[in-house]
Length: 245
Image (tube, rainbow, N blue to C red; front, side, top):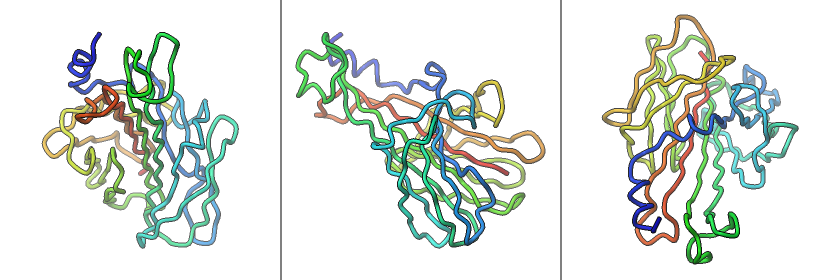
């Protein structure tokens, strides 16, 4: 398949998460986030949320917390068994937005196997792509209270607002609303994820969970054509939002 055909095939968003059956998320191991306490922030990966089955590459991870005041605290992630973890000293009360970015870079599929770099470095590549994975978790907000999760500012991000028993999700790509993307929801302890719906105008989707509190992971994965002039064919985007209420 030539490059033009690959770009055409990548033009429509593709739900990759369902095919891969693996999810990546970030969340504190312990709650509540009380000032003066040190909690463990953990990045999980697998298909049994919230139990992590495999540690992602910690060297590729930018992990940080946005405190209620807006202060940004950079954490030092490291492999911890089947997960990646970092300590976080809580200094404020209220909603914290925990986030990470894993830019896995550009790779090419070649007759000699998968190699780093795009077509500029691998002229024999049959396919070249960039993969970006992000995740956000909300923690520290009073249970049962309305929650307004403002964007962190990631390249690909899912935000959530909780009011009147419903979550209003919003998908942003490079800061702009992304419509037409499938969102999956994975309630904690469930056997598998389910489709929550597709984002509509403004990148929004309203999801009403079952009555009562709980925890869940919302996840989106899609494939977009590469920017014009890039040395690769498409971008694999993955993002998730971990919440509890």
